[in-house]
Length: 377
Image 1 (tube, rainbow, N blue to C red):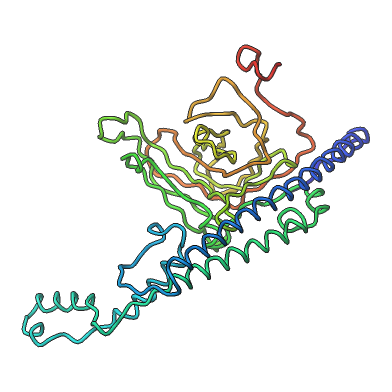
Image 2 (cartoon, rainbow, N blue to C red; image 1 turned 180 degrees about the horizontal axis):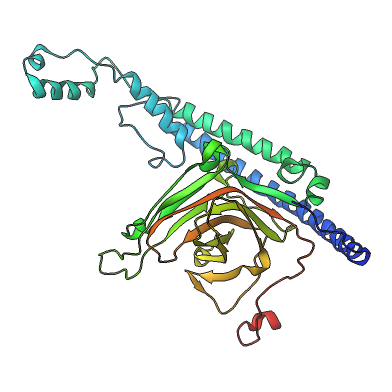
């Protein structure tokens, strides 16, 4: 992307002065965030160390038991590693065991069914050994390893980069699609969650250089007696997580525009940005703006200033508008709900942010003392 800065002497001097003030503000904010993050890290470390010691004292070193294959949802504290340990132990005992002669007397389908049942029966000599202690120990080690990397990266600078590089950065790619691990950072959803008929899928594009979102939109309302409207499909980025599953956020405060490279079929999409918040009252609040695809085989570059995003709650535009807080971004999403039934697709190359020196607008929507008196005190 070209940088259109420096078209005139006066404008260049003004932009340099304003960037200098922003650099000091970003530096002070970074130092305060480092101190705050260290307090959180120390608190979480002491908490999980205490939990590990309590588990060690109460349950001993090893626990031997016969149990079905667990899942991460059954034990959210132990996570996926505990499920892997149990599944590996169970796989050792699923070898075909010796069946009795009485089982072999059955013929045809009955004998095959008995043979399948016999696979799930373990002999009395075989014991399922599940090491809860080792699973928890390895899980905690991984979290502390990530914790150490986060501490080192914070002392180096934001995201583990020197601070002067971050301050001079004019553009950054936040999401790109070059492999399956990039698709795992996103989730797809549709009105099937409320009984609708829309379908949406996500896969890698040609040559693993893009992500292809495709499916079928149906505005037929579910026959549940409650919903009267339907027909939407969405792609939402996952909330980034740190060590010990702590929620993290993106800091885009030094940028003023969203930059996308997409290719669509001519349908209009809604770009949604959510702020990082733990308040239940704000879980359905987001900032949105429209993205119109041209259709055809050519890529298009979409640039949306953050000042254009309007505030909405549960899909309704609110009368009281406010600016998007760019230092606490939780996720971004794309929603299709144009009430045109049929197939659709949207191909995304990358999603990034950049600074446009020519854009000086802070907020595109007006407020009045009648609508938001708190802003005019």
